[in-house]
Structures are given as C-alpha cells and as structure tokens.
Image (cartoon, rainbow, N blue to C red; front, top):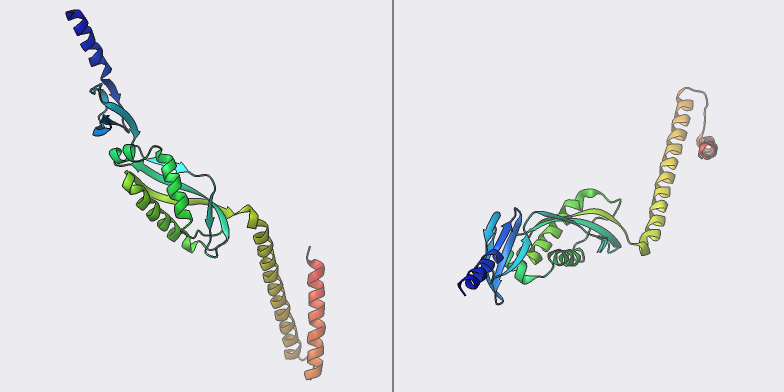
Length: 231
C-alpha cells in the first residue's frame, strides 16, 4: 500500500511538470473558474488538477485577404490590411474568445465598412487618416477581450471586380481629355508666337481680317502636323 501510494504521488507530481517558453503563457482554470496566469520560463510545476491553456503573447503580424471597403465616393474597393497586435490580458483573451486571429479579422472587416479608404491613383494625403481611424476602431473593439492592437495599415487597395472596368474607362477618358487640352494649348502658343514674330520683324503687314486668316491657317497646319507625328 505504501509503494502504491508513493507511486501515485510520483505520477501526480510528474503530471504537474511543464516547460515555460518565452512569449508563451499558461492560463490556469479549475472547474470553469480562472485561477491565474503563469509567464515563467524554464521547467516549472503546476497543479495537475488545474486546466492549462497555452496563450501566445508575442507581437504578431497578420496580413488579411482582400476585404470589402469603399472610397470617399462610395465606390467599392478591395483592401488588404496588415495588423500588428498581441495578447495583453491573457485571462480575458483566453476566456473571452476562442480564436484570437478570427476575432481580429472580424473587427477589421467591421472597421473597413465604417472608414473610407484611399482609392488607387488618388493623392496619398488621406492615407494616414484612414490608417489612424482603422487602428482606433479595431483597438476599441479588441480591447475588451484583452487584445492590444498597435496598427492597422492598408497595404494594397484595388477596385472591386464589378467596378474595375468602368473605373478604367473613366480614367482613360480623363487622361485623353488632359492630353487633348495640353495639345491645344501648345498649338495656340505656337500660333501666337509665330504671328508675333512675323509682325515684329516686319515680314508681314496684316489687318484684322488677314490676321484671323493667318491664325486659322497656322492652327490647321500645326494640328495636322502634330497629328502626323503622333503614333
């Protein structure tokens, strides 16, 4: 009986041995109640009757899949964000949610629906504002469950497939309009310079009607020449 009791005590003692690692913590519970957190490293002994749950408390980076978002005009976007976070309160994190990464992803999805993200091709003046707003919203949602969020940064933003073709056509039309306006300005400047030089050097003496005819002919000639040189 004594040997049996000693063997049982030995097994009980060995069953409580555990190895603590840096960046990991043990959340202890007994009969559904929280009993404490162990953050020590190395070999340690924990009461075998306590339920142990390992929690990763290291700084973590999570890169999302493309998520639904919108720009300031309400146009549908797809955004990939990088989240920097860690478990701060092990008790709340272990007992409050089952999957920390999934919870962070859901918080990011909810924040993207409330914050307007900078659209591709727009000036980057609002990028910092959107990042700060996303970080603030996600941190507020994740804080009650013991998760500390340091940054939520959009790393890639593109138009949603259902609007990408229409946006592409609009951008091409705007670019074509700018090129036409630039070409017209260049032609007008060239015509004005040519007429001014001819007049100042005394090569021609024009009245108003002749000046208008010369301007018209030069404009047509410069436009035709520019059209031939363009690819």
